[in-house]
Length: 143
Ligand code: HEC
Image (cartoon, rainbow, N blue to C red; front, side, top):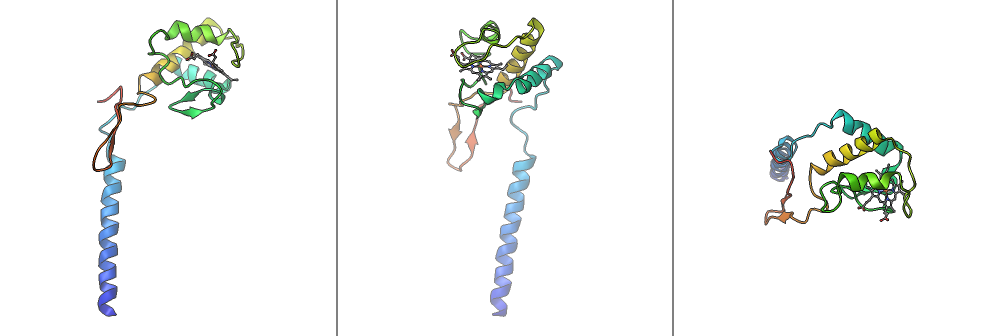
């Protein structure tokens, strides 16, 4: 009995130690993408994005509403890009409402979407699942 208790304590101590090291290594590793700091213009764009409920119909990295398409990489998609984005904003097409943005506000929204785009790919078709269970994701702004 005495012996079993000691064994249990030893096993639990080992597990807790492994768990701690594992967590420490995950939460302190920052070898992948750089943290991006939005420009002032892009922050204004983000505020417009929030206040006009773009997110209720559109997704960034798959998160948001599903009435309209995901816009994570719209800036860098071939045949899309800044002019294409702007053309949608005040036109009112299908389920997308007609907004009344100034040229400067349109620029801000484009700038926000450009900086979101610069961080990565969605969907990320280049993810590699390694044998040890880690998923290697391709970032656009790797250090
Ligand atoms: C009520 C839902 C709704 C809201 C709110 C909305 N959109 Fe849309 N949006 C749509 C739909 C639906 C489409 C697809 C229209 C089409 O394909 O003809 C679209 C298309 C777009 C496109 C073109 C996407 C592509 O890949 O062709 C852009 C860019 C866009 N929206 C930006 C915005 C921005 C920025 C906002 C906020 C200011 C916004 N939308 C708010 C529904 C919405």
